[in-house]
Image 1: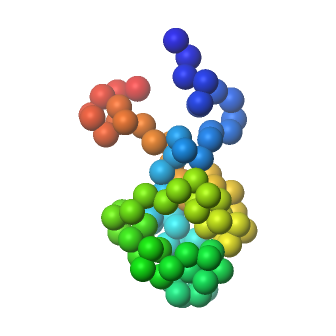
Image 2: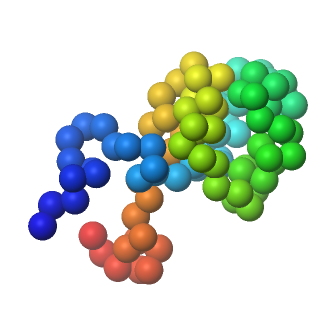
Length: 91
């Protein structure tokens, strides 16, 4: 059976998770401090730090705001969330 949420070229935001390393790199590439980026994205600095530390999972809406604040696609700092990979299973 085919999982329709991953068919085609685009993947819905809720099927993805933030890659904190990529997000940090994109922020740094724009020469922004985390505080400046938090203001641009409309998120508290504390919440942004929690996302980067993998302590919080951002909502779909927040992921879209982060992408917009960076001027990039969600695909640029997220990865497909594959529970099988976390369990050590091959795809």
